[in-house]
Image 1 (cartoon, helix red, strand yellow):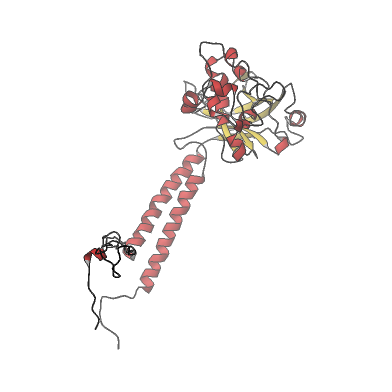
Image 2 (cartoon, rainbow, N blue to C red):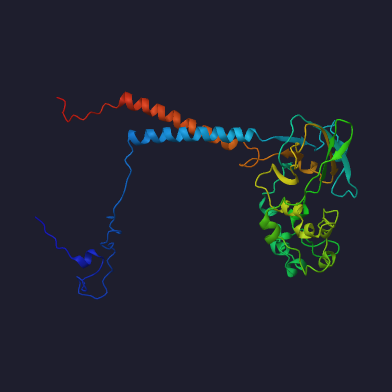
Length: 373
């Protein structure tokens, strides 16, 4: 029979002060301290999964998710949306000539008109978007190609932009700093879209498109600021800078009639600078506000879209489109969330039924403690 002594200090990971060999430099004891944490004696809780707890959970999730999904799906389907592709790839497209003849080097704009009919009227506020396809705004070098300090109005960054903006940092001919610099700003979407309504009596009226209120509040009032003193002329504040290579006009002429929407704080520019995560995306272009009376915002009937074609997309096999859409409390038209809820709820309910059948069919346990012979 073997016996062993117990030393509390050694159990706690301490030495008794003397070495078995009589030396003072004995190796340190690597045994963990005798504490509840290090010896894993802390109280623990572990759920015991039984049919009585698992099956109700499956049924509750299913019965909750399916009605929510149906509600989301119906709400999404009630949102009205109309989309027009005006890329001009097809020979019968009204914008075919513009798509084939206009390039970044063109000095004059090309105008085309697309006719369409709204079968149902659009109530409430209507939002006009422009959409691009096969445009990878999420490319790493593209996303980094900007100078946030310059966009925030810092004077030193205005005249000496970040090297991240290369090769759109300075003008190759004049060597002046580009404002705004970078690939994102250089590729600013600059098509002009105008909407007209053909009245039944033959008259035509232009639909009022609101260009303010389309950017995020924090972008408009915090992230983007014009440089210099606000009392000075905007042209003077951008003196000694050059426009981006692909722009037709400098940044201080984006909206010369409205000083609150010109320069770096132009809302079309701000919306474009918020890069998209996917190659097919849409960005808010204008808002058609609801009329004060009970008449529809956009009545059913014939319309035409007048497009000033400034943005070529054939070089990257892209497509352009205009979208008219209403919104609801859950945002724009997107049936995915409702379908996801219905799918998850249906799977949970189905699994609950299957597990319930298996439980009743194969659960042979009894409360008897008899041992069979």
